[in-house]
Image (tube, rainbow, N blue to C red; front, side, top):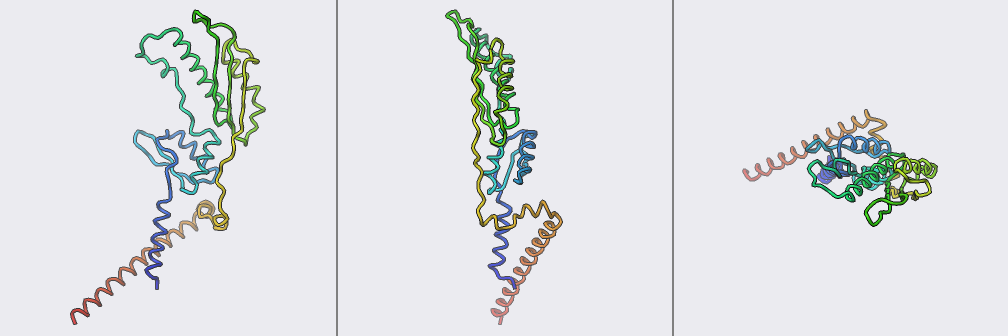
Length: 252
């Protein structure tokens, strides 16, 4: 006979399994969410999408996978940084600005475009580009411009071999700049994955069962559901029987 303690344990296990997911990211465009979800699944981290208002979605993962999920996305430069476009810097309803302000906006736009191109390279986690040019006392540009580039990349990629191509992007994208006026600093990111405990390593991961034996997993889930129903029914009958005996004693 299944005891009350066993029933409570089974019920608690079901509740824990049903509520162990946490929100990884919220208000993400669905296209980007699909990209991140595919990446997580490739790393054997189960994830699910939850629709939000306005067409955006949120990504949810198991609580135990949260740290590794964040690190997987970080190592791949996700979520992508939102950069300003020309419509942001030059809105149609803006007031008249000075030539110096217009130049500053154009330089910022150029920096954003170069950062976006560099960030599209495999292995780049983050990219920053700064363009500088001297201005004379009359506010006019003088001398040769220079650029500083900082890149943080995933250690899985040997991005040092791409330095020549990165310099070419800058020299081709900034008029008047020469290769010796471009400084490039690249820094490899450190891994920050969470190590699994030995106890967890000794247990057969139920996610692997779902992936490798879907039919077995479905049958197990059906058996667990049936067991819970039978257990609940047995408990209900026991309560009714006990109450009936109590009422008979009172009547006698």
